Length: 225
Image 1 (cartoon, rainbow, N blue to C red):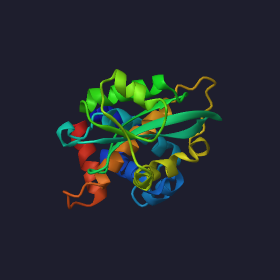
Image 2 (image 1 turned 120 degrees about the vertical axis):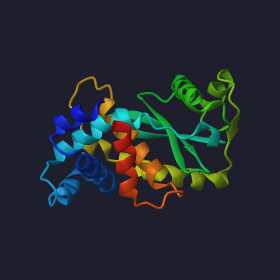
Image 3 (image 1 turned 120 degrees about the horizontal axis):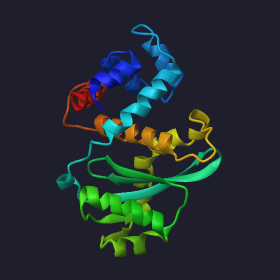
């Protein structure tokens, strides 16, 4: 997306748009983000929601360096979209604490696991995959020629801690982002998770002394110019 078009739609300067998105992701409240922005510019919570949605294609461009990815933890969490169950499949690199990739599906099956792991392999190559005892993982990994391991019980807390920030925010997703479409394609959910993924990976970096908001704004500003 060209930066001029992005800013023209919002009628707001790009740094303010990106700062508004950052504040929202920190607070998990569109109304709080709108109030915090008031000294700079008055924008509704709906405007901020649209900013976050439109940032998704830019955030999709960011990946962790595949050479630095040594092993991958995979998990899935259930959310509700228009009252129906859906699953967010997520992949983390534990050493880097990086959120590698995700996929959203309306089913929890071997096919969904296969499609997610196939996307993950295309982005990061063949890396060892660690999962819980979900029955859909071994066959999916076998078909994709991925090394599969079941993580021990003592690792469960580690997996949960890595996944908790995402789970906490998705727990009431249907209340925060209600969907009014009869046959939702969950694009609005996917867009939100894409922006959150980039936000997470920016704030966990330990090799950058700049304030977190500055890292977030600069990374997206550079991608838009």
